[in-house]
Amino acid sequence: MAQPLQAIRGMHDVLPAQTPAWQRLEAAVRQLVQAYSYAEIRLPLVESTTLFERSIGAATDIVEKEMYTFTDRNGDRLTLRPEGTASCLRAVLQHGLAHNQTQRLWYQGPMFRHERPQQGRYRQFQQIGVEAYGLPGPAIDAELILLSAHLWRRLGIRGLTLQLNTLGTPSERARYREQLVVYLTQYADQLDADSQRRLQTNPLRILDSKNPALADLIAAAPVLTDYLEEASQAHFAQLQAMLDAAGVAYVLNPRLVRGLDYYTRTVFEWTTDVLGAQGTVCAGGRYDGLARQLGGRDIPGIGFAIGVERILAVQAALVGTVQSPELHVCLLMLGAEAEIAGLALSERLRAALPQMRLQTLVGSVKSQFRQADRSGASLACILGSDELAAGTVTVKYLREERAQVTVAQDQLTDVIRDAVPDLSEKNGSGVR
Ligand code: ATP
Ligand code: MG
Image (tube, rainbow, N blue to C red; front, side, top):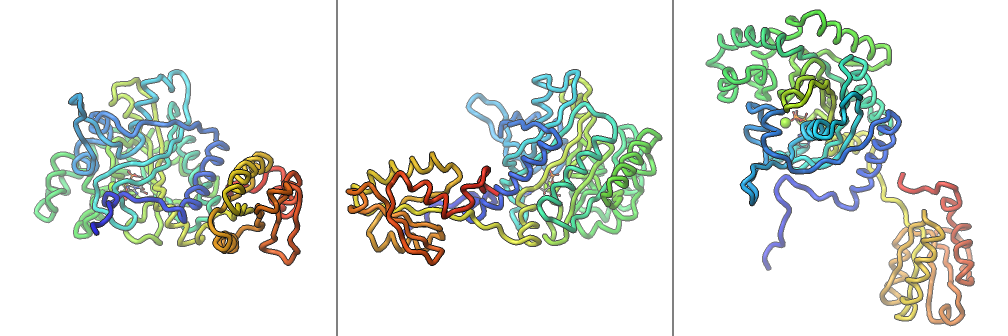
């Protein structure tokens, strides 16, 4: 027999055993962004290719070799989004969301990059992004970092390191760039092919090189922080004072340049050493010039994105796995008539007990009892021909030493509520 069709390399299914961990993370994020008053925005997966070329930068890895770009039936050049910031700002400009007001936004969804698939690096991966517009001062830089630190605490994740740097303004960067080129040109013959090309196009990118052979050379390069003017210095110092006062530790890393060209001033990454090479779980920064670059008015912006697969991997390593929520009730439907009455009964029960998790069973009597035993449910409710004739249900307690009872169908809600204490609480257990 031929192999059944497979998913695309680097694009993964999230299987039922894994979704509880995803849902718990999503619930924690939803709650936290609400607490900080960020509103959700939902963005298309496909944008015009120009949007990413103009924002991320033509000489970045993403635009040079990682984008899924295609021509559609109208002949338009389109790209599956490789990240969310560009789309988010595009939407903000298009709808005037930051016109005479500030905006705090968040989104989540899949991103697409044609990278070499490996642990923690996929071709479709999930990001949660948080962005703020219209706020030029360092307080919002600090707020976003505090929000992310707060999320790690909620998730029980300890031991992440916050790396912090500033990239200054475009003019500060231009002066630095000259000096960097002077320095790197001395060692041009030691650079790899990518870096030699970038020496002309985008020399700062060389600092982001993952090639270990260049590590020493990069470590001895001039640092941008030495080229900052007073305003940028003050912004960075103020941010550090805010983080100090809030008790968030950080490491200053003058080589942190990030993989995208649009950043100005603050950049940061949260890293871990439990994931091997793919150690960055969250990254972001300020991008004050980007709105102009996209043809809009001048709007300061800042944001970060969490790599969901990576943060879940850290959580699994540090905190352990998340169990699926338990089933409360199995309804055994013994025979065709019982199936007809049983489905109607199960709907009445679910309407009366919205938090209850109930599964109906079909099949032979033997198989249904076996399924109920293995299900982990607290109760087995049995609807056979005797019960049908009498308008009753037989209730078997699967997890307590307690004699089974036969009750009228309209008493069943009370019996279930009595046997499953979770369900009598006001808010129920829901998805934890
Ligand atoms: P890296 O240096 O690991 O390539 P990046 O700088 O390209 O990351 P960003 O564009 O800043 O990453 O994306 C933010 C976060 O999204 C990263 O910190 C990471 O957690 C996650 N991420 C990025 N690319 C991938 C990928 N291919 N697979 C899984 N997660 C990813
Ligand atoms: Mg990358």
